[in-house]
Image (tube, rainbow, N blue to C red; front, side, top):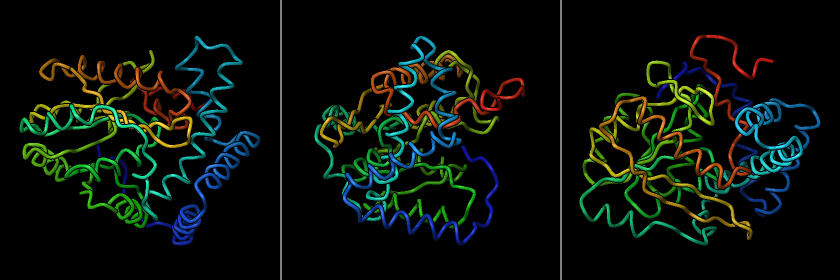
Length: 301
C-alpha cells in the first residue's frame, strides 16, 4: 500500500492547511460547507485540476449519461467535494461527527460477527465522507485504521492526530502496519482501509473499474485470508437533512479464489455503492492514473 517517498514539507504550506482546518472547524457546518462548495465552483470557472479530473472520470465511467446529466453530476460532485473540507475539519480539530449521524444500518450484523469471535475488516470507496465513517467506527469499537502516509512529514502528523481523536489506532500502510492489523483482526478487533486507492504496481492487479482497467490493491484479500476476518463495506452518506446515514453491509466473496476474480468482485461491490450515491463519490481522485502498458493515462489530454 505504501507508495512514494517521504519529503520535508513546506512549513508555510502546512501552517496554512492547519490554519484553514481550525477556521473551518469553528465555523458553523452549513457556512463551512457553503464556503467549500463556492471554492469548488470557482475551480470550475478556472478549469482547475479537480474540475478537469472530475469531468474526465465521469465521462469515462458513466458514458450512458447524456451530456446534460454528466454536467449535472459534475456540479453535484464538486459541491460534495467542497463540503468535505469543512466536515473533515470538524472531525479532526473539533470532533463531533458522531452527533451528525441519523441512521445506522447493519450494526446488529457487525456486532454478531464480533460476538462469534471474528474480527471485522471494513473497506469502501471515497463515497460520502470516509472520515465520518472512521470516527464512527472508532467510537463504537476497538478500531484500527490503515492509511497511506502523505509524502510531507508534517502532514502525516496532522492526519494521524486528527484521526486518533477517539483512540483509533493509526497504522501505516507498510509491512509493520499490515502485520499489526492482521494481529488485531485475529484478536477479534475492527479494522478498515479504502479499496479504491491506487496501490504500488507490486501491490495490485489491473482489473475493470466501471469498465476501465484500474490498478486495484490485493491487500484486502491477503488480510482476510491471513486473519479469517469477516468483510464489510462501510459508507457515511449525507442525507437530505445534511446529516449522515451509516451503511455497513457484508461482502460475500470467496476469499480463496484467484487474485483477479477477487479484485474484480471488490470493484463491482464498490461500483454498486457509488451508483447508489454517484453525486457523493470523489470523482476528483485520479483512479486511472497508472496504466497497464505504460501508455499516457486519461488525465494527460
